Image (cartoon, rainbow, N blue to C red; front, side, top):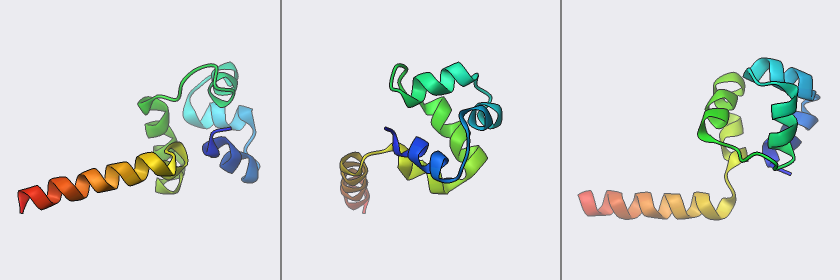
Length: 80
């Protein structure tokens, strides 16, 4: 399961509450949670706007975050 939905469950947020707060139908939330529909940038943006930056890393696996930070370091070094 996507860590965001684990986090939401730990915060006692129901599917109905997530749907209402994020502007999606309950069916859409279930489909996103169950992996039937892919998580897209718009959903992540809404989640971050609603719940804050603490949820942003919940959408990215550690390998992609590490790769992104290495790439940023290389780009920053090249610009120096």
